[in-house]
Amino acid sequence: MRMKIATRHDVVFSHYKYFPFGNVVFDRDMECRRDLVRRWVESEGIMLAGRFGEWDYLWSNQAFMSGRRAAEKLKP
Image (cartoon, one colour):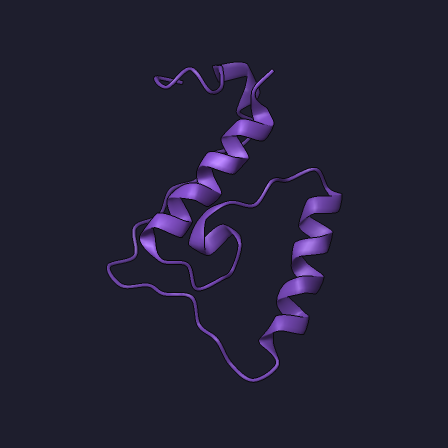
């Protein structure tokens, strides 16, 4: 809201939980499961962005650009 990307009425649900350590975990053939989940989430109208949102190993600059692309899609 402070960045004027969304208003209070745009936020449907918010949840925050702190994890002291975390990383995207990759295992054999995870791409198939990841893509299945991505397709379902996007079919529900939810935009994925960032390292954890995209379930991808992104460097910091790539994660930033992922968020920027998502924000650009939301601009009127």
